[in-house]
Amino acid sequence: MEKLPAMVFIENEGITDPHLNLALEEYIVRHFSFDSDYLLFYINEPSIIIGRNQNTLEEINHEYVTEKGIHVVRRISGGGAVYHDFGNLNFSFITDHDIKSLNNFAKVTAPVVKVLNAMGVPAEMKGRNDVVANNRKISGNAQFSTGKRMVSHGTLLLDTDLDEVAKALTVKMSKIQSKGHKSVRSRVANISEFLESPVDIESFRSLLLTGLLEDQDDFETYRLTQEQWRGVHQLKAEKYDTWDWNYGNSPKFNIQRERRFESGTLDLRINVEKGHITHFTIYGDFFGMQPVQDLEERFVGLKYDKDAIIDALAKVSVADYIGPIPASEFIELIYGSDLGENDSATR
Image 1 (cartoon, one colour):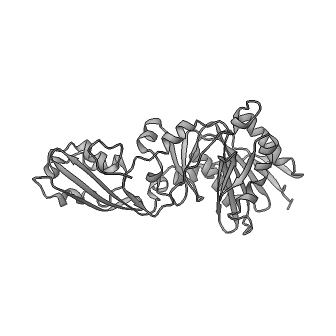
Image 2 (spheres, rainbow, N blue to C red):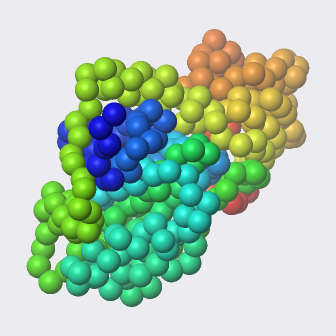
């Protein structure tokens, strides 16, 4: 069998759908030949990419994300949530599993840092997994290993809308106790701030690719076959497009939310496991005509998802159970968007 090149650059065909790009990345690490290392670049539409072990609802401003149509997708690697847009370039190295490289982000990112330095960017590895310039984060990195192959990937903030980063990742949820790994927000900067001349994202991509491959004597560019693309699309449909993966795969979490209405105080206690409500209790000094336990039972087993909650209450008179409280405000209290002035819930 003919030996494959030491490094193969995978052409992603200009795809900007984060669901498909993450499926492509996983497909490569699980199905491509072990005889080569692979390099993948991709640029995503506005999206929040959630770490493997995170509670999605703790990381996003759900109302803002929904309003703006920002994608929310979970990746297979750990680490924190990151914001992607057309000003952000993502890179992935797919290599053999190497215990010396696993969690050794300085080693993995060294080629990228070298190229950035050559462009005049004072980039350096700092902390656990960040590349910074003048102590401001310009790249976050994460890894995943199958035990045989591993992916080391990161972001490169060339010209990202940093205002959108703050808005999309400013969480409105209140009083969540979770076993998920919460993101730590860092001071961020765009790489463009450190370049002498403006560079668009495609030119930056070309410069980075040239720099990364200049030390490679043996490399090629590869385009997936139709059969391989079918496999990628199947993985996307079965995993990265699903609520179960992006939201339901969150670790267990408990929620307490309290709000005073004119008719009395509501104090909600909600337990969520694998994205579904396992326990739902309503406390308070309200007056209702029907047993509140009957209302509580409607939520057990339900997806912790706003649309599912709305559907569950579509034919229910909430006022019969908890007094004259608008159903819409009850739903907002359950799911936790912006709360009113009288709310006692705090994060």
